[in-house]
Image (cartoon, rainbow, N blue to C red; front, side, top):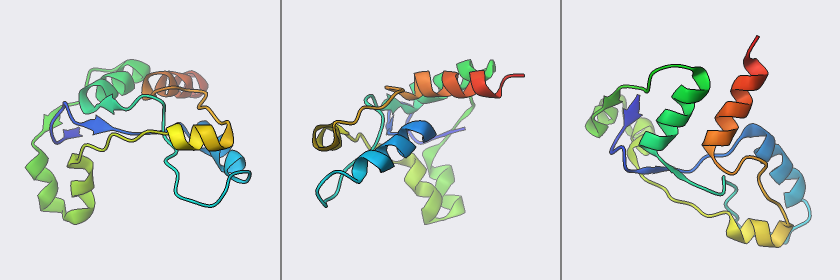
Length: 114
């Protein structure tokens, strides 16, 4: 289910990319870095990428206010963070293997397929 506006953004990262970023982080100066895909997707595009990888129909969209029923923790899913990994890429010489959730979800589906 998509919570919030489908045109809002989701910044994500594949597990393998997160692991390689942890290793790369050992070589950079202390600081705050964003470790995410190269391309944040809209919630709509993210849901379509997941559905495509799963070979299923796109998720049902629910109103963002529905998240308020479940408390503040879930309302973070209605926000629209658009985050850049440029500072970390430059500091660490790191790049994600999967530039967006499109490629990441397809790779995951290939691994999990029987």
